[in-house]
Structure formats: C-alpha cells, structure tokens
Length: 246
Image 1: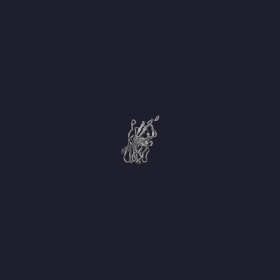
Image 2: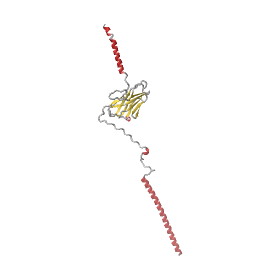
Image 3: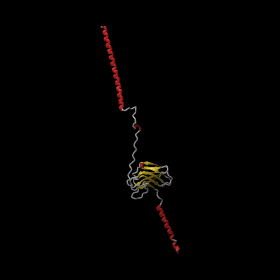
Image 4: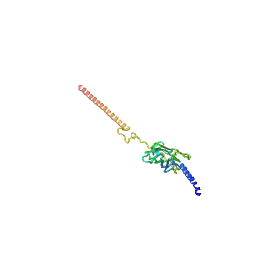
C-alpha cells in the first residue's frame, strides 16, 4: 500500500521540474549581441589612452566589414590614431568620428580593435555610437544611450570615467604648421649682378654724366684754342704785309 500511495507523486514532481526548466529556458534565451568599450586609463583628462572596442558578430550569413563610430563630445577625429585592428583594416577620419574596416571577417567572428586617444575629455561617461556593417550589407545600429538607468534595445558602447588625477589639465590644441613660402617669394641671399642697387646705379650715372661733361668741356677749349692760334697767325701776317708795303 505504501508503494501504491507514492506512485501518483512521481508524475507531479516530473511535471514541476519540466515546467521549471521551460520557464528558465524562456527567461534566459540567447544573449543579445552588443558592442563594448574599455580603456587602459579610464580617467577624465588622462593622456595617450588606449581605448579598445569589441563588436559581437550577430549575423549567420556574413562577417563584419566596417565599423562607423561617432566620437563623443571632447574628442576630435584628429586626436585619434589606430593602434591595433584586424589584418588589412584601416582607420579613416570622418567629420564626426571615424570609420574602420577592410575585408569582411569570417562569419561569427567578433570585430576587435583599439585606438589611441590623445586625451580623454573632462566627463563622467563617454558614449561611442557605433554602426556595424556586414559583408552582405546588413547594418546593426548600436546608437542608443540609456538615461536614468533605463534599458534600451541597442545600447551604444559607454565608457565610464573616474575623476581626473590631481593637477590634470586639458592639453592645448596642436599648433598648425607654419606655411612655407613659395620659392619665388624667398628672399635672395646675394644681390644680383644684373640688377644693381639704387645707390650704385646713381653713382654710375653721375660718373657717366661727369665723364661726358668733361669730354664736352675739353672739346670746347680745343676749339677756342685753335681759334686764338688762327687769329694770332692772321694778325701777324697782316702786320708783316703792311710793313713790307711801307
């Protein structure tokens, strides 16, 4: 009788266990793909920080080929350089951030890369809105920024920052390189022999004029001297002729 009384309880226990497993399976479900970000020094105003990203693959038919990132306020595209990325991938600056990509990764392979940021801004958190483009053209948008602790369906990678180190200050913007004057505008080191300076030209002109004036004066004096000689000779001849007639 004891055995016959326990038999009905076995199906009830089995059904309860099966129901618990079903509920657990429904609540757990497959983990949703997402994008993550970490930093080597997650502090406000930290310098030369390595920021690493991981974008989980969620396509069963194609691999990730490109990531488009919108930089948060306080980080400009020229303050970012590529440190590590999948083979053949390159980083290209955009007006509001950068894109990084190349040959599509194998299907199911997460996209992992890292950049170096010149300096993190003085903020409490940084959101890196990301668009994932797959080889088949599919785009996943991780661009939602949760507020007030609420959950969102497509959260952007968010980097939480600690307080700045004592004495940390913003870095001054990099100075723009001084423009190099064109060769035609470069000053000449030595004066050209074909183009004498104004004083030299004036002196040369004065010397030429003086020489010309001297030559003219000599010519006039020569003419006057010749005239005097002829006049004296004529006078002498005239006196001699008169004496011989007397």
